[in-house]
Amino acid sequence: MSSITAKAIPAKAGALPTQPVRRRAKVDRSHWVGLLYIAPAIVLVTVFFVIPLGMTAWMSLHNWPLMGQHRFIGLDNYIAITKDVRFWNALKFTLYYTVIVTIAIFAVAFPLALFVEKPRPMASVYRTAFFMPVVVGFASASLLWAWLLNVDSGLFSPAAQMLGLTDRKFNLIATFNPAFWSIIVMVVWKVAGFTMVILMTGLQSIPTELQEAAKIDGANAWQRFRAITLPLMRRTLALALILSVAGSILAFDQFYILLRGGPRNSTITAVYWIFNQSFVSFKLGYGAALSMVLLVILVVLSLIQLRLLRNPEGT
Image (cartoon, rainbow, N blue to C red):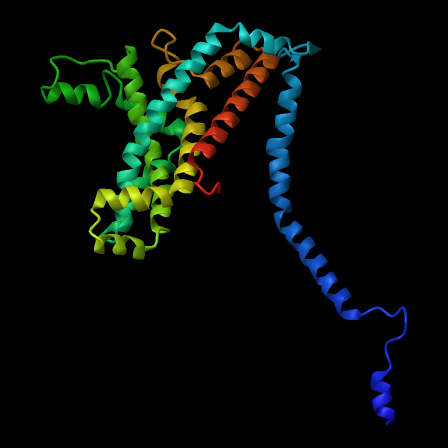
């Protein structure tokens, strides 16, 4: 009887249960462990992105020469941008280049992704070969193509003459159209492998059961591609498209090394003009303002792409 009574006696008033406290302590500990794991990434982002972005925004509000005292001028740099015809021409050319090179990259990368995604002999060799140019830096690739395009000691012009395709040597970078399309070919050769890997990952995430069921229902390859592959690759396409557009808008190395803005300043990109104003004319404040304007344009274009390529459910 006494033992039953002892079990029935409630806990003392004010006594706290120990189990929830222990569980809460474990949750708090795991929270701090998670923060510790991401701390290096936070430090890197802060040091190499957030702080430089804040400094650039601050510089854009100043007349900031390379030597001498900087002076606060408010929004005068941004007002000057509205009257900078050279910048708007460079931005117009950059957008034109972005559209052309993005279409060209996807036109090459998507068939390559469809080719290497399917199980076939030597598939890994093909993937490695197509991806190899990606590991070459843009500056190194530009120097390589500068040699290939050289009218005398290069490969293309002498080879075309030896094969009888032309009666004399020709300079591919002397006029706008050959120079522009030479850049396009070089960038596609350099970047298509990276886009191929992204698209291949999206293709491999599509359940094979859907493709097999569509085949049983009599759908041909184009119908399966349009009704199954494309809808299920919206997020992958959005990622690849944003990376391609952002990289194209920020294009600089190939135009600076290969063409130096020529012929006749017809291939000056937005970043090339920012470089010119900042490190040739030494107007660092104005260059910072141009950088902030280009950043806003990039963010707006990325948001538009995400909205256009989002799923019908809004995800």
